[in-house]
Length: 217
Image 1 (spheres, helix red, strand yellow):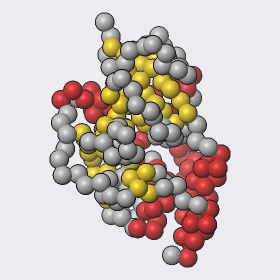
Image 2 (cartoon, rainbow, N blue to C red):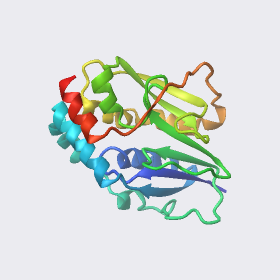
Image 3 (cartoon, rainbow, N blue to C red):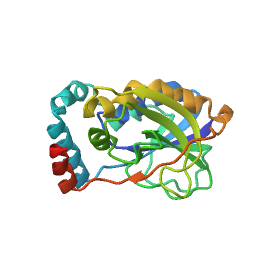
Image 4 (cartoon, one colour):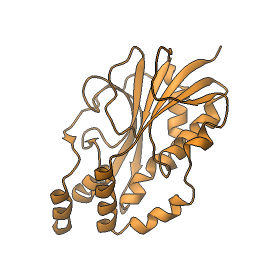
């Protein structure tokens, strides 16, 4: 009998749901897949668009827009289900992919795919903080969720060169590296905690003042 897994996903048709579709296509023969969606707040969307505009990369957004994916396309099979509540269902694992809210503790293990080097970037808006810090590399990591935000043990990691990359380039890195997501999920039972991963400061959502101030940096 197939085991159940659940994806906690942002209802983002451009960068997130295409990853979910790829994962569903490659995992539906192994699992019954459930998806719980949440939306980015309107205020946060405005901040993202403003940063892209100030960075000069907003026009690059349109090349991804043409390949957007709807949730209906993902759930158009009998092995994938969109749910609002987990109810009494038993899940083997949960995976968070750009989920915009903190996930409360569950009876099963939940893993988060995080974009950002844990030393430099815990939290959100990595593309904004990179504009200020000018990092040379970032990571995509798979870590187990614990009581603290972006803090649990790391199980899988991929380093990415981001020299001369703009905000859209950084936002699209998970989509370009979606096979890392698939490989990490398939091998989840064989992954061991990676030692000596330092956890740095938590970078919170910037204010509108912070965003405008970044123009003069």
